[in-house]
Length: 205
Image 1 (tube, rainbow, N blue to C red):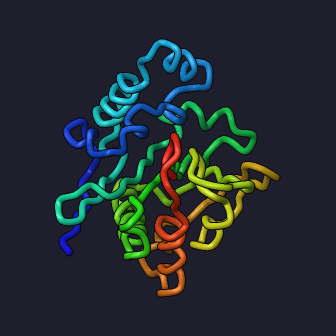
Image 2: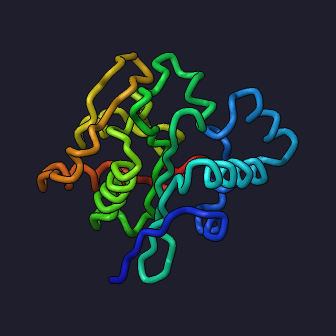
């Protein structure tokens, strides 16, 4: 099985699931996001957002290919580029961290270690850029694929709660720890980005 992780660019944006290519939950603030949906322009807004982040900060994601088939992706960016983050009661994300926005692996390719490889690739990328941690807004009542990652799975793979909340706690993972994960944590990552997956909803998790 040949697998590779490629930086997300405008050239391979079409390899993301269709629903993700036209979802701007994180990329726009709530009012602007609703306006884009009503105007029928979320796909254009998504492309414009990725283009802006590429120009100003660099690649904000990775696309996973297995035998040249796109089977997953992860999206991340500094909080300044994630307007929706300010709408959460546990914001802001720490200044030394990058926000883990969302991630997804196609059913049928889960539980094969792709989640571990994906997150470790992100960790190495961000360490090179001088960041110390990844933070995410968890969903304490997660019931299926949505815009937020389930808080309990984030905790299972090494994230720590830095600001508690009954619904949307903010969690943090120190990047250097990801480079020396033990096998049990790697398996937990597979559960986070693999076996816990169900059929994608409007925003694959």
